[in-house]
Image (cartoon, rainbow, N blue to C red):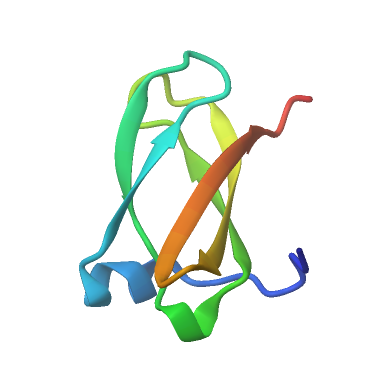
Length: 75
């Protein structure tokens, strides 16, 4: 997966689609606004909604859906 494209958070907020993300630090799940299909693949620097630790969320398009996963920045 090519992570060269960094997508703005406003894209997902305009589109309204949410992706459930699991924090790699506290393991809590929370929804994050997803980018539009045309903006994927991309990565977003994000802080956990629960523990506030930084993470990098990678988004990609697969089988008609925008999917996402998070990796900790402290790793």
